[in-house]
Amino acid sequence: MEQLRNHSYDVVLLDLGMEGLAGFDVLLALKKDVRFREIPVIVLTGNESDEALARSFGYGADDFVLKPFRSNELGMRAYRLLHPLPSR
Image 1 (tube, rainbow, N blue to C red):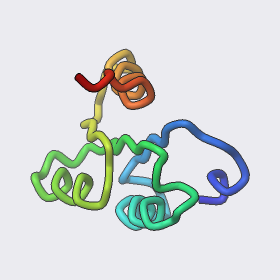
Image 2 (image 1 turned 45 degrees about the horizontal axis):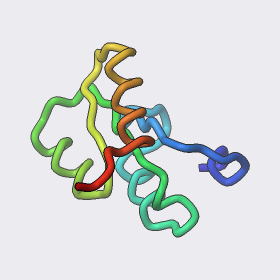
Image 3 (image 1 turned 180 degrees about the horizontal axis):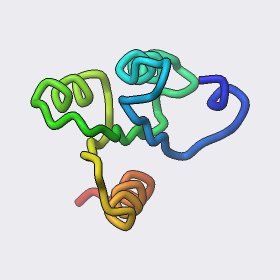
């Protein structure tokens, strides 16, 4: 959170398994804060449960990626969030 306050980011890659932090708490804090709520968040996790998926999207995640992941896939997902298709 300190890094977000001190720097500008286009997308956040949020690992739910961060040491010393609760990933869902960080996600909630991001989406509740007017300064950060519009920044797309991609959740990264090794937790394959339906609960982790539902909580992530329920708390405002823009995408959900299971670990291990392919780096090119992660890059494409970030690109899609930053360059959405035009509306028809």
